[in-house]
Image (cartoon, rainbow, N blue to C red):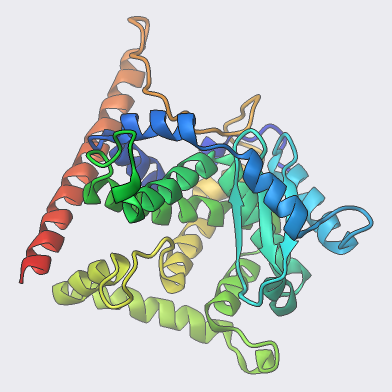
Length: 336
């Protein structure tokens, strides 16, 4: 498997992930929520819970999973090495959280469904979240939702800042963040079919009937899904589904067939080819999201940097306006 020594998360981070984060940070109330998050939420209780309630993977505990994990950590140059736990849960799922003490939890149902190559893809995907610094914002999103659900009990001034627009912006970013982590999975496995096969199994895979599943058919299904966008009404329905209409809750991940489209596109790109050749942006540290407001840049900033920054700001502003417009649509629908 390839190893990307010193690779920066910016080398593979999806531009939609970057733009959605900029839009999230621009939503009124984000900075205050970030400061309250740092003040009131701690990682240690979660680490204690996992240590007490799950199986921690190591050289003599799930040795095969430990080997796949250590190889993936090395491939993506993630430091420090996160903790890895297996939870007794039949749902085929996994997640990564934590900043100072990052960790990954993999459900036992996922291990029963996937083969070794596919498990490697999942581990690399979760490591991609840690590498990109997604875990801090994911925890903030989860905390913001808990604030909304218990808003009447809050006494430290959060009621006025956790708006539906901020929640929407968090979920919009979370969905885009998955695209970056899918790229991390492709970098580690170096096989797009393995990544696609993993997505197919997590969408509706069956261990008993795995021999009757067809990856080409799943890819065709993804192409059919893209064709739906030619009808504007279908685009509206997609938006509504992503934001809880029909299911009752917002979706934290893009539809799998949509992720198939994005990762296939990147697998055939020059950017991916150059990374595989060793031509990628390097960094002395893993990616991390700082939840404090950014300081303005100095006067020594080059014209090229200023131009790129302005482009990013324009894209973020456009996405922020889109969030506001879509929120207005939600409000109108609620009033009907």
